[in-house]
Amino acid sequence: MLDNYPNQFKLVFKNFPLPNQKFAHKAATAALAAHGQGKFWEFHYKIFDNMKDLNDAKIQEIAEELELDMERFNRDMEDPSIQKLIARDIEDGKLADIPGVPTVFINGKLLKQRSLQGIEELIEAELKNEKR
Image (cartoon, rainbow, N blue to C red; front, side, top):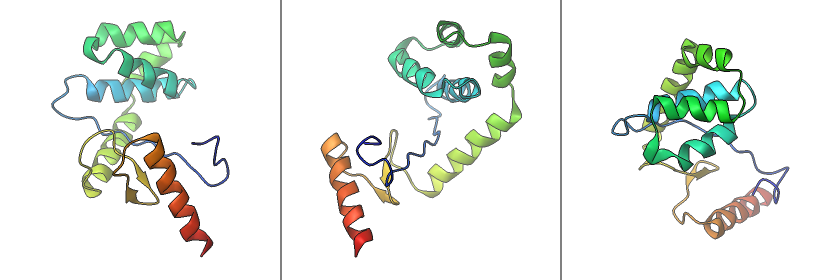
């Protein structure tokens, strides 16, 4: 979608680790630690690819596989600013009353039809509203 609407579309990602998923918070922390080395999305995708096997060792394995500076990565995993960012994202999610994850909003409107077609239809509708 970003390629289709390069000047009209901005992607904002928020973390909302679910408390009933044991490694969700640690996974969010790890992805943000990877972000410091320009590898957020790569780490994010690997987390989801390995969701059933996620544990401390798997997080370290992913970081090594992505050739992160492991000393920096592990230091960033303990960075209080990352924890503050995740806490802020969680509060934003609670205020938005999100129904679960992943949740998509377009111009503040909850995407109900969670498909590529649904996303495109809502974007097109919002772009038409802006032109009025």
